[in-house]
Amino acid sequence: MSLLDSTLGQPLPNSLRKGSLSETALRAALANVEHGLAPVEDEQIWTYLCAWGYACLPDGPTRLASVLLGAPPPTPTETIWLEALAYPARTKEYNSHIDLATGDIALRPDKAGGIQFALRPAGEPSWIAFVEAKLYSDMASRTTHDPTRNQLVRVIETALTFCGLETRTTTRVTAVPDAVHVVLLTPRLFRDHPRTRFYGCKFWEYKGNPQAILEDLALATGAIRRHCPLDLAGCLERLHLHWVTYEEVIHALPDSAFKSDLLALARRAGSLLRP
Image 1 (cartoon, rainbow, N blue to C red):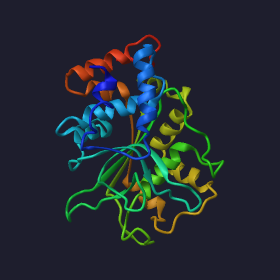
Image 2 (image 1 turned 60 degrees about the horizontal axis):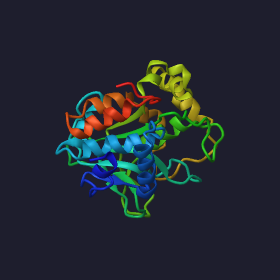
Image 3 (image 1 turned 180 degrees about the vertical axis):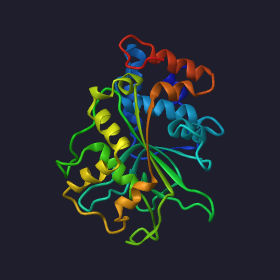
């Protein structure tokens, strides 16, 4: 069975949720890859295939989270979200498109594909992980409404201000996660040579000096949304940054025909992945 038939030709696993992801466009792109025997040049395809592989496992979302966080999460999770829409931190922006998200996340009632924080029972640690995936492309040096704010720091800001809302129209925050994980997902090639990409330079700057996050955010011109926490300096205590490779995500899958197909796809001539 081809990767196209084993994924888009099957019902969506219960643990896999798609936000703004277009299955029609994804099907066409994956069909071109399979029939043309070309390497995958779109991170959305690789992210989808990896997420599907984990979503088909009974404990798949928690397994994937363990790879992304570098350790088992403090509590299990039951869902993997693709191209989910998170409230932006700033008033004049549209929803932030998160390539992949997992953790304590619930569907937002006001928008298809929209997500918000889901508070855990009292006494249980809460967490979220937002993934920014890159294959060939580099990180944008600016966002649509702000020429001074790069794409990675926007994802970080969106994750730090991710919250639960009392109602769909409320401006009062009911809860925020105890731990916020932002994960950069790329080929191993670029983690081994981080200075070849702008996101590599900024990731290690932010990792080594969290104050640099605040300095970059201070340059932004948009106003913080009223329903988001305003003390970003305090929020940094909840932030954890990770850089994970597609190769690691694939190899952590249990052996199966699907995993073998992924490895074969990664080994095609011209592929950036090096399994």
